[in-house]
Image 1 (tube, rainbow over the protein chains, first blue to last red):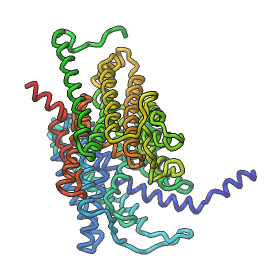
Image 2: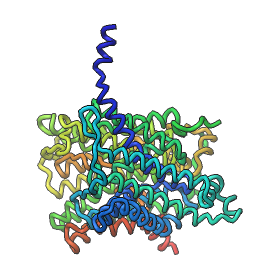
Image 3: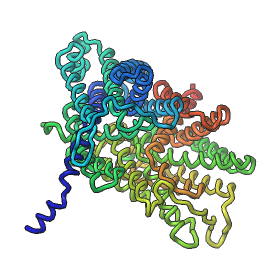
Image 4: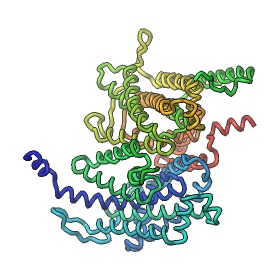
Length: 298
Length: 333
């Protein structure tokens, strides 16, 4: 009994609560990135290696617009729009010619894209990281910390964007087209749905979501050219763990993995905490390769 | 498994002979050029050529998976890096540094990593295989990067080059010329070995897995075991490339374990032509040469990956068979 009591006493409750909040906040940003990635995979069979670069470019677009106008929310919207257009252009130029080829080709092309975009950002903006000013500077007290309200706002906004996107998928005409194409591409085309347009639209929406998460994430750390690499790896893990092409699963997996990493960071160095999510991925692939958060396939 | 693999060139008995003759004449000619090259080239380009050969070996090892088995690996940086660190460890720990011990240790390191990766990732196919190999290489990267006490962390390990010692025959310091010959011998040997492997019944099974995996399994081949063998073989040669790179540059650094090295490897393959073994070396040469030319024309700070990345994208879309495949088709026309 004494040993057990000591064990429970040794668990730092306050730290765990703080890390839970942190984990949910990063988890929501990750969910926003990963839902674009999983959508693009689910509809187009494209594994988008360049998704992290869209996130990074979105953050830079936000930096520029916010510096020019001084308004964070304008920057958020403008960055999403700019990246939607860029995403559509990228899809038309590089991915459309690959329709019908092995999905492995799309990994290679988007890997090439990620190299080009990342080096462009390095060349254009330089290696020094930029800062997006906090849109709201108020704090609340969480144990001994002054926790910024902005982080809570990020989580809420990410949830809002994902929710809005879900409504869009469910009720708008374009959303119905997207779902129809995901179910059966050939049949959808036969019914008169413009499938190439759906592909371009889906890539544009995914890019815009990545850009929005980039701008939202910008104020918490800096914006630099290599920030995308880190996030795209985690988004890959989330998408595989959640089940490829499964929106709800990705969101659940994003929060699950971020929480695990946050808890691991209590005892480990943050750079080593990443290994926890790697291990989750490997276990998932070994024991449940269809994904953790999907119904067992019959 | 008594059925002999179908040999495409079998019915044409006479052309088969000339085919082999042409191959060996071509091989000897290229070897002759590469043997003489360091005697003519200035120091910088001599080292450059050696480096191309090493990158070519790495790319060639990954071609066994990409081109012959149809599995795109994004994890070759792990094998390369473990080869580097294995060699570095042996050279630092054993007091008169021994070249052969370094090679053995590097190969052992790479084999360990390859066994680990092969065991887990070959259960998965297509993009899942690619993503898992990528994640595995990142695991090795994080371990190497953060385990500062053993691996030197961010700074890596620095050591001095061992002597080139062939027992009873030769023992001298490496010069850049003998280094080149040594690397050339290793790469040429690996090439001949891998070529033999791809033409053996084992290699035929790998190609049949690439063409139609369920059917290969239905015929009765243990596909999983063949895939594991392929990954391990490929990992061993990637490890050898890592050892050679470490010995040539006298350091082991964590950024070679980062997955961008694997990405470069895939780029060499695609540019040169997958499924050809020679193609990846050509691709590595083309890539490094373009990079060098761009740096000389536009200065060191020029982001060479922007134009080269675009070349890579254009090649996947319009020229998926690579430079060598294109040249071959053009010659046959």
